[in-house]
Amino acid sequence: MTTTSASLSAYIHVPFCAVRCGYCDFNTYTATELGGGGSQREYPDAAMAEMDLCRDDDRAAGYVYDRVDTVFFGGGTPTLLPAEDLVRMLAHLDALVPLAPDAEVTTEANPDSVTAASLRRLAEGGITRVSFGMQSAVPSVLRTLDRTHDPERVPQAVAWAKDAGLQVSLDLIYGTPGETLEDVGTSVRAALACDVDHVSAYSLIIEGNTAMARHLRRGEIEAPDPDDMADKYELVDDLLSGAGLTWYEVSNWARDEASRCRHNLAYWRGRDWWGIGPGAHRHRDGLRSWNVKHPSRYATMVGAGTLPVQESEQLSDADRALERIMLGLRIAEGLPLEVIPGQARDQVQVHVDRGHLVPAAAEEGRLVLTRSGRLLADAVIRDLTP
Ligand SMILES: C[S@@+](CC[C@H](N)C(=O)[O-])C[C@H]1O[C@@H](n2cnc3c(N)ncnc32)[C@H](O)[C@@H]1O
Ligand code: SF4
Image (cartoon, rainbow, N blue to C red; front, side, top):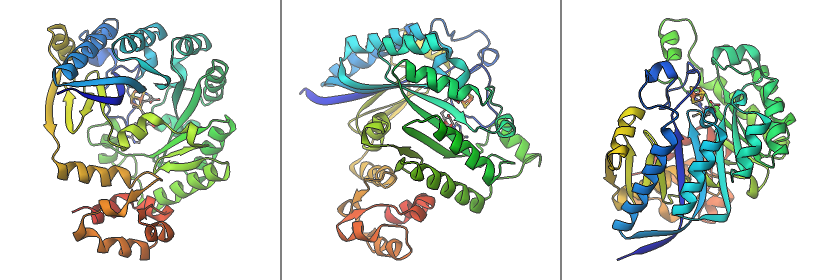
């Protein structure tokens, strides 16, 4: 039987960075870390070969997609590759499954990995949106994060992107050791001064196997304090909402519906997507798989005509229901009450009473987090899942 599903999303991972930031544990490699394996020059061909394998695999399983609605080049630093490479990968995808006329095509970029000319080329080649890793506007905070760009570079890069006709989003990180509340305000105001329609703000997570975690273990920096993090989140939310950007997911704010990141919404709504590249995750109708992580092993497997899958799992109905709660509760449209299993329903009123869920929405059968609920999203989700 052939299942024709309306739409597909595609995530294309680019696992290369010029420098590794001390807090980052994404699957990305500097030239030194790669040690000559899995070269950047050959990477686009490997990624395109994987797209062919995904399309064949879908067909063999009876899945045919009408169109690709959203594409996201993530990293790593996709813009470390020449613009032409991203454009080539996008054109290859389009030839396999046509891009919708209004497809959203985002690339992540470091502010110092683009030029006016490279952004123009990306826009001409079909990229519609760029998400810059701004992180902070405060030089000392950028230094603690090992960021290589000058704060002045961000407004410059945003202006180039807008001139090229791209939509622009800025990523911020709050809670860096040594960062004050005033620093957070400075960064959010600097992001708003760029007049962008979308901002993501993430609380710093100090992942185990990073240089920053080693600094923490040696007592050279202090661990983030939960109350301080909450104050910073509230300040971010106050400043962004005061400037007309409203939250639509716990860490994401947009000026209006058209400015929301449709690609991320597709993940949060459990749609089907391809995950192209080392370590990338794919989802098809409850079948989840993830690729081998090292670019060199990835290139070898794809070169041999094999899907570079490390492992896969078929989600049960119960897993999918759980995932729907975990993802759905984090977005502003919320969740219908009937999705919550019977045994966890009494927790709904408990969280309404504690001020974590919007009472009026709950009365109408929808669960929507309040701001204090957003701060405790993980705990609320735990209580509402079986
Ligand atoms: C994979 S990075 C790619 C973007 C690009 N390479 C850059 O750094 O500008 C995507 C975003 O994840 C966020 N991020 C990465 N590691 C993080 C961490 N440990 N804690 C919080 N946010 C993190 C940063 O805001 C970053 O912009
Ligand atoms: S935060 Fe971005 S630039 Fe820094 S190492 Fe991670 S992916 Fe690379």
